[in-house]
Image 1 (cartoon, rainbow, N blue to C red):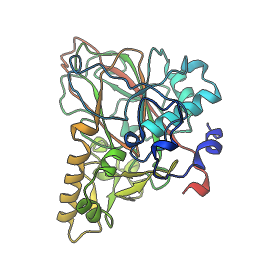
Image 2 (image 1 turned 30 degrees about the horizontal axis):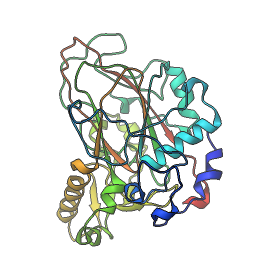
Image 3 (image 1 turned 90 degrees about the vertical axis):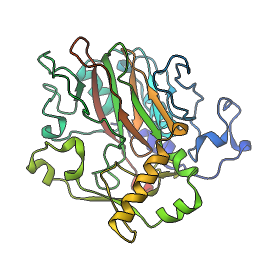
Image 4 (image 1 turned 180 degrees about the vertical axis):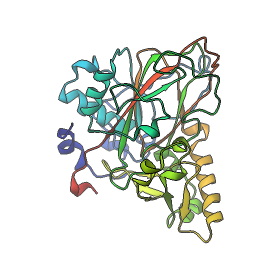
Length: 337
């Protein structure tokens, strides 16, 4: 579990960043492209396949930095701090050419904060044996039999993870590791909620300033088959739609998912209309990145500043899409919230 990063990052406060405030090595992106995030301690290139190669293309300016900290099985404290800083600044990062066992992935996740363990019934009735913190995101069961040609599967809509946790326990990083991938399709899409907030029109900002999302774990589509006892263990949570990042104070939208209730407007219907507009804005091509998987990829994203979406692929049992997800809750100093 990581605590050192609190000393170096939690004390950062957001301010409008001018070009003169950027370090000399910040050549790849100027201040406009950070959308209120403080630049990272190091400069990174963005992971892009190019317009001719991607099946789904997005124009996000900040998401998807490629970070090289060596093999994650040998990660140092400095390496863990670098990863957290890069995720904070970029929202979502890519680490290539890894080969983690389930136990090694849990160990790596623990270096980023507090490992999150959800009730087994929340994991799609397909738990990873011996590792309750692992979520299997795959078209094959743990016994290597095909699950069948299901459509509209787990996570196949724009959403944030962790919105059902009370504040500040909703500050969660997700780690996803690819072990097998289909020949085409199956990307994971991301949308930049910092960029969406900074570019939101004045009328919508004014409309959203008094609004908040109200989250009941009972309303989350992916948990529809959760056991009643597990669902009832989570109290309802509320989050302001116009929020600020816990590590650097930068402004962002917090919208949860399409099923959220919105409080603070004249009627529930008015809240629904606002949420629909904000989701449409946030997931436009200017703010999205679609990660096309290679075997060995590890991607890490900050759920408070990004939406994500599992994209379809040909699922006829002839190929596997085998990913493993863990989550780490940022350890937040009391003064930071």
